[in-house]
Image 1: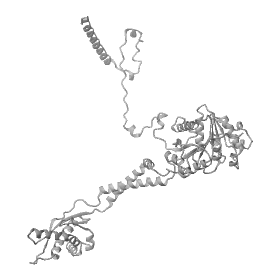
Image 2: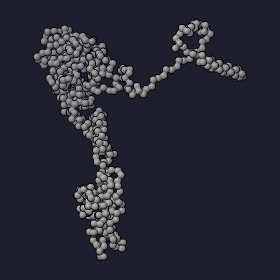
Image 3: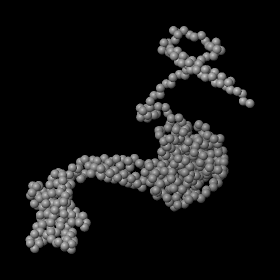
Image 4: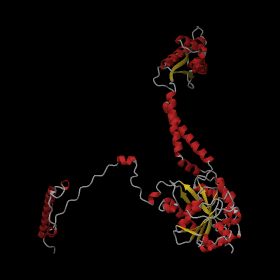
Length: 549
């Protein structure tokens, strides 16, 4: 008995599958949304750092004085114009003179400063606005009063030195006149550090560092983090995304929590497989992965359970003859299984076991030559038999990059379902798996992305939220609703009054339950009497109207 022929449609070449695997714009946007807290931490750290630097830095004060330079000769307009041009050309020389020892040494002696003229020159800055004869002299110092004194002293000394070294007139008087137009005053606020500027700079630098960390993490992290990346790398459609369980389950999620959103993911996978096998009533496929511990065995078990929810006959076969796991997960005995059938020690009916409505064939004893058994004629006959007896056959096989067992079995069935764990498998490993499947002539049915982060509101659609799970803020701010007052009793009609039971003795009732309804009854009777009078008046008015002809 030979295995049925399987149709293998052409797949995209591996070279094309690698295209688009590089990080794109959407990938970085998704990374920023996923790791927004890194950017927030960077911004907060920048704010704290900027504030800390502003607190530990020594305050520095700046005092500024302004000087005006002019010529003392010339009475005509032409002479004044030439004198102004001459003075503007000399402003750069005057600025350099302000920082020289010729001017600063007298200032040091006058103010008894404990510094040299060279040190004092480092705290002086001179600027000359363009096309003016004004010189602005600024002095920075940790003492605001001393900064103002130094600025005024330097301005006065500079004026004297300029008048001394400037060319003399015919009568021996100075040709350049220097006047102080704005003396330096004691500054009230420090010019440095600027706390606001430090905070803004720290905030911006923190955000940039956070963005840099996210970008580097995305570039250096080659794992398959999203369905978009997995589809680009694999080149096959994404059939389903399986959520990561918040806590460890004692068994398959289809049995322990069948109404959860995680269980619904396997039902979506079942529906996707129905579209894949739309041309055939029967389906046999292999479930494999790229590397170990990607959850392929658990996905095989849950998918098989989801397939049994219909009217199909489903068989789950543990074809991982190296590290079998289904026997341990289901609790079924694994002494006899697939290897027993392949070596001729048992038949199919002898090794099939029923577990929660699902037929299961365990792997049996671990053989020394798994690849030879899976590629034998006995394996082909086994596949043909189970494909004839069952509507759907699921083979749990080893990872693709470890051994070739999965490719051997997948060639004899309808194809392979590849499981990719977004937290473990890399893009190169997934691309290698798809390349091996293509070179082996195996049809890739699709991709299943495992351990996807669950949506925040996905489980509320399937179940009512658990009571008492409100946040502490909601419990603190919510007011307890006041009990509403009971409705007032309606008056009894004559027939109801006759059928009403006799009143009981008030002394028998509890005193705490007695309610005095006399005022309410009197008020109700008054309102009822007024309503009856209004009705009588309306009837009388209606009778008084003449009949319409």
